[in-house]
Image 1 (cartoon, one colour):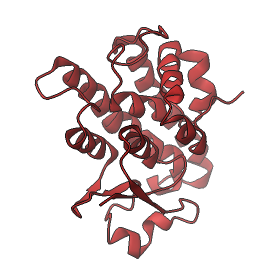
Image 2 (cartoon, one colour):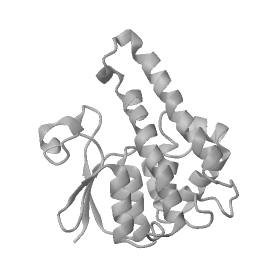
Image 3 (spheres, helix red, strand yellow):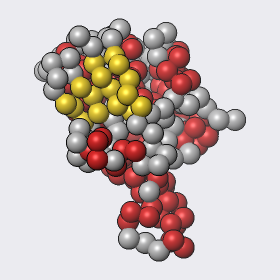
Length: 215
């Protein structure tokens, strides 16, 4: 049996699809266009009550939401996507993934949907600008404190050891204008992103999800 992944190109389903490709797991894709707020429709919210992407259905029928939880679950099912429990590398990876989920992701909602936050239309751009800056502050912390080297020979969060944390950092580094901003301001994260983009199973998905640096 295969996985079923609900998402759209460029959305939070990107790191999940990449993780599945990395381990060669079969997956059926279900498109949920963000344009027109298809994720808020009743049929989708019957699966994911929060009306967000992604949703992953495991082969046994278990419904998974929240990209962090999905990636950790996939790592439990497919050894190698994270270090094992008790390994300090796993603790490091989870630290930065949790920071992104808790502090970066909410700013993207504000960036994408300012009208949902009780401000008048003339305040939308100010809210977007502040959300973008707060999101970038999170990435600056990771750049400075996560132990990234920027060395092409050892580019990942755990040095030479690839993990789903790298997928999460790489994909999210492209959001909220990050395709232009990250290469110009975060050389260590950019080196990580480029290493992820070169992985054979991930390279076509990197293009599909519009992650290439903008020039």
